[in-house]
Length: 334
Length: 82
Image (cartoon, rainbow over all chains, first blue to last red; front, side, top):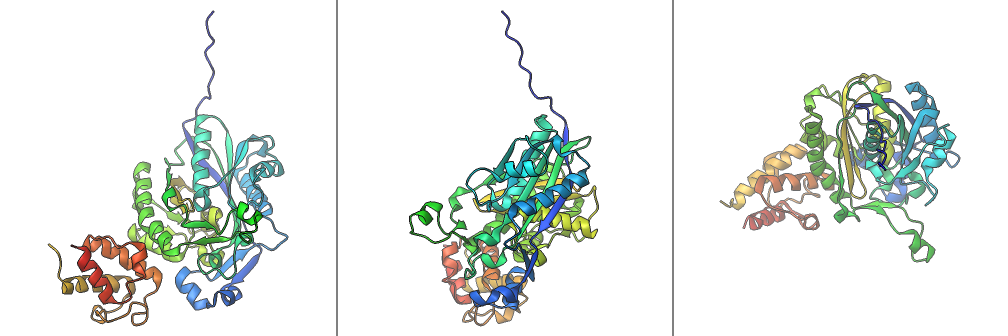
């Protein structure tokens, strides 16, 4: 008896981002609004972070509300039927349930049920991790279209008296539809992690400590200088590698969209990369704040909306954060 | 060959000037980075990384808080060149 030959997925050659969607917190929070509990000032915060306002969501605007809004915009702009979405990837660290996933609920809410759906926990690198996986799913033939969402309601996990990170943080969601393409639209991804710095950014306590009464509500905190050093000088290497594996140079780019962590990190990264003048450097952090997994798609969406970059240009996107985790790729702007 | 203290000071002053715009002649051994030169912690970290590159030394993150004056940094770098 001859054993039948297994069928496998039929790959497609290329993938690209079809469209983006964006949703931000409904509240515009100024530096003066938050400076009191950290004994700070508008000037101090602007000088150290570049942030003038951050967008936060009020109590009746949930992480899921923002994710649905951003996803629906991306689906509509991509001109696809949500029933054709073959996977939903939701990068977040602020979904308030250990299980089930945010992605499964999102898939149902946007009409992609019964698509496979799962969350990605890679913090500020999460969106770039998602694009890497979407690219692989599409090119392998496992999914025709993939919805990638980076979304956070970080304001649920902040301590107003924390001077390390809380005052930077905002809320929002960015979405992308990835699908098959006749030309290359997503470069190989340079991604990785460094768990030897697992403690450098994260939560003040675990849920078990909360249960046992040995800690209060866990909030975000970081070792700012260690993270700054890593985010600039290690990420410069990652960014250069990403350009190299993509077969392009900084000169070929229309934009660099980094995780919007802090304007000082963004500016120093741009300086170290010797970014040519014609390349737009995304600085959405000034008005949106640091929205972790949402920051790269929100910043790219804004550049396109403002007409600062054109569809078809190349953008280097790079996410980095808790884990430590990082991911970078060059994409053709949708 | 290891650089002398004055050579390290001159090199460090260039790094400080590049990061902050402070005149190189204002960067003197007895000046405090924070109180006299008004350099914040993020700029300090940038200066440290550039100094590591320039002088071929390693300045651990936990050591940075002990570098109060320009002299502290110059002495640390001079000794670390070993």
